[in-house]
Image 1 (cartoon, rainbow, N blue to C red):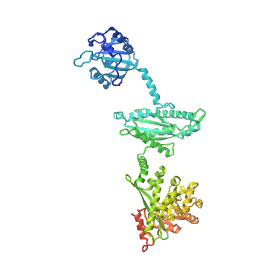
Image 2 (tube, one colour; image 1 turned 90 degrees about the horizontal axis):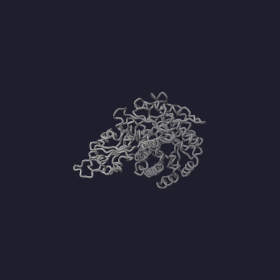
Image 3 (tube, rainbow, N blue to C red; image 1 turned 90 degrees about the vertical axis):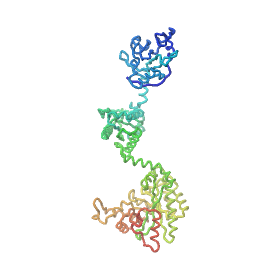
Image 4 (cartoon, rainbow, N blue to C red; image 1 turned 180 degrees about the vertical axis):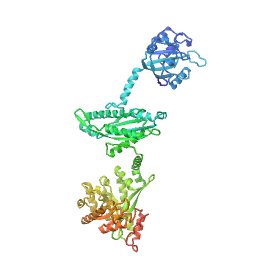
Length: 629
């Protein structure tokens, strides 16, 4: 038997009447009451008994006898606490003793009682002191009124309502609320400190392409498919039942999302096996009347120690892992990877602080020289952004540019890069009036072309800084330029008509449609560094262990350079790292080179030093490594 104390409650309506009853009903009151109160007590529809200060029943009415299935006269002298199971748990027993001693006004609790015939019922038990009309001296309580109400019907209704509340009407599975209730209980310390493995696991799955089923066949068919999936998952869980922890809990969390909760898991192998069984169970087609439907699922698997884990953290990990399974190709399960998750968290942290970082001035530009292959002179520089992050240190653009493109902050960031680079190029020009001015090359993202008035931004920046249009080069990736039509093509033509040079960055990694280039306002091709790396060795025999020289790279580059020149384009080779590469690229006909052979990306003052070094009286070109830190 068990029960729960429900604390203080209003006294029963018959309490005052009983306190004024005759000596037989309440002998300790010392007063005889009118006989009418005996009849009220005896015939009252509420089961009641008078209990003395020792906890023994003095008198019980007929309703209590009927409720307990015994003669009410036989209850006299019985221990009241035993009749209504008040001693089964320490909390309720202590509260009852406090009422008996007069230190507590009343006790109300719910108890599961057993009648004499073995029938069980749920009862609400109320115990409160009988008032003493005289001075009790030391405050001794004259006795107690015990009242018992049969609440079995109410409990049954509550149970049915709870079942409806905690179960999904489509699949009959536990719903999200019940799942989290069980998960929370499983993570409480007392649930694993006394036995068990102290571990927990979740398989969080989502049906692939379920929306198409709803859209094509209607929601009724979709609901039937969900119910059929639930049946297979339930059978799968039953087959995976563990002797210690039983079968995993299968729940529908909403939409086409399901979860299997494994309490007292034995390790990741158990969860991986369960996830594999789930995928296998869903492979056979579903026969739904006149329809035959197939569906797959992606499953995120998390298994960890229970201690220190919260429901929110566990399900966040499961949701993240499910997303990975979707991103990795669907119809598979993926195990949670802390390192991969740390990278994701870092990305989220960077994305959240990108826009404020622009306002706080956390970004800076470094510049890498573009050097003429024939004379070694600096012809231009490429502006490369760096983020001086207060937590993660100096970040290269590959850590945050994609994030900026995703959330649109690339537009204000791109304006800042353009304005800063043009202003710096103008400073170099003014500082070296006797030298040919160098151009500055700025990378432009596709989203800048679509989401901003790039032409107006460029025109305004050039006017503000005083930089000539021909000293500005804008770089777009090959995939962004090839196939451009509509607005992007109009923007590129407008910029070209303004005098700005357009360069295709990382050329050779995408479409490589040289014929299409003749219809684009492009003036420069920047060969991807992957081709240049094949030039690293003068011969195949020069390559070290694990290194390969690819003679085909040189043939491909030579052909691209020749075709580009025939189209009136200049060619820049990226990632030039050795003098041998530079020699061979120069022989092929590349116009300019960029890479660590000449300089790493450096601060503006280092570029100024390069320009001073190459000025009147200085050497004709840039020496290899002069810009290296």
